[in-house]
Length: 234
Image 1 (spheres, helix red, strand yellow):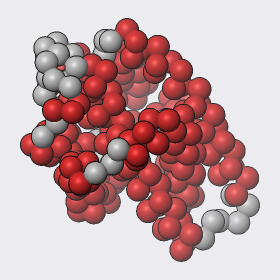
Image 2 (spheres, helix red, strand yellow):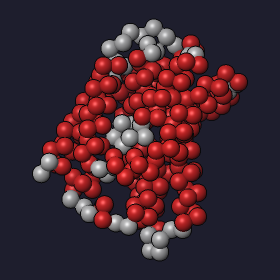
Image 3 (cartoon, one colour):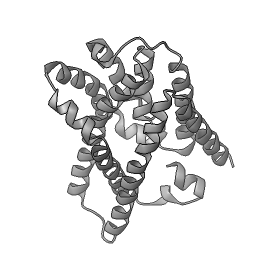
């Protein structure tokens, strides 16, 4: 939403089905890159998966799934605009910076059902464009006083199933609707770019995690949001 707006493209003038198809392709490319980049972490999590993990995952997944079913269309109609996205970026930056000030007292093994619900509610807020699913869950985990490395792992483990679920759901809808004629090449190019950029950014994320601070994320979000606001005001 922000890139076409800041570059002056007439993206919103495209047929809604074309836009949705292209966004599905981007989503799928990024999701596949996450699975590959996090394959060791995902494999370790699957090997140790038990009933407690299943319950916590379901509780963290449910709020986002229910909110999506109830509010996906109105959110896309009313909030998928450059200015609301920019405001959400800045608000998320403030939330991340504030959350990072909480003490580090808990390990991810200490997570309770109440923690799962709280992080799930934070994840549901990420349905608003610009909030960021990873940013919302990471901030919630820090407010719950999880140590920064553990908060990062919790955020990824909770967000990845929703990302994959959204990609599959939108892919099924796209298959039923059909890919518009002559649009497959553009979709493949977009998916490839999303895959490559997501995979490449994971090294940067690892570097930032080693610094154990959320401030670089918050600074990036605030700067991007301010730039987007300035562009939308012209």
